[in-house]
Length: 488
Image (cartoon, rainbow, N blue to C red; front, top):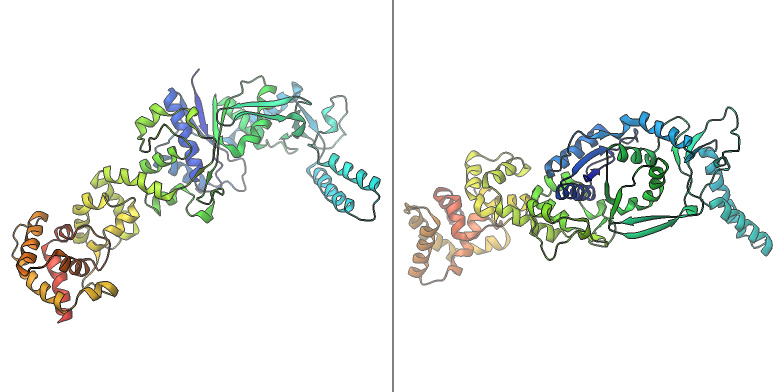
């Protein structure tokens, strides 16, 4: 058997980080088994589905390297096939036509609410209270239409829906690869609508038909769909189709243990890329470990992930988003990334807008040092800020306090020595600073903080000798002279 997985998002917004993890698991399992990974856009909700959302989903998947093996299936284009199966289920006796309207069902629920209020009246006798509670319980039972009896004639001229005929008394059992053996009593499930009275198919029917027609063998999805499985499996059975193997993965929670939402910060893949500055390989590695494990391995590249990934490694407990751990994982990939690639990514960021060629050249030269100090591109831009500051750098607070009269005297003495250096490299600069402090009989602690203040303005920066080397002789000396003159 060739394994076929699928990722089937609804195009009602961006690609959620939880959806990206599901797509990754599906993609990895298909690659691990030598199977296929397919995409389906479940766009049956025409009011909420948008082309912009479809484009955002494809864009996010493409950025993560999770393209499908073949063109994506658009569910909304397959309504005719869905209707065909609904009618076939009626022929097989696995579904039936029902004239009960949505308004009538809403009336049942409203009546149940009325009975609840009535049963709480202190004027009722125990017998009256019991009768109302019993009537309410009957109304709240899973709906089983009187027309599920094939002998009952349909009213003439009244529109009908097609409902699935749920088993009467048996238990429905799913052997889930993550949740284990899960059992639900069939009597606790509604006879759900498969085809509306206007002929449009419902989500539950469309999903099953599409999974079958696409040859899906394994459905890996969030555990918020677990209840749907018990409504979908009888459709497979009704058509004598093979039921896929299911693996329902727990949802991603925020640091507070609650379901991940906008209150926790970024939830869309594009925000992790554009706003937070993560690399696709870093985010993929982190998402892989967010609900799947292989021993103590934290850094797992794509090749190793394909080799190791299996459904047995999926965790049953919800995973919590940990941004510090994401930074640590992504920082590993930042340090390994090609310098030119990172520079090109930096150029696309808002922090790069308006920078001169000279400044950009400095940043490109500094990339080997910057990337090892940066867990993401946002921090990399912050680490590069000392290279971009426009002279004169205005000092405030602690940095301004560093430049006292004594400090200015030392800067005045140091500037000509640095100006004379022919070989402006880190080792030579370091030796010159060592000779200078030795001549004055002071330690680096007496000159280093002052240099850091006038050269960086207090911005994040590496070792001071590297700062001097990266800024270049002319810029370094100019920044030092600015503060000697300002103080004098």
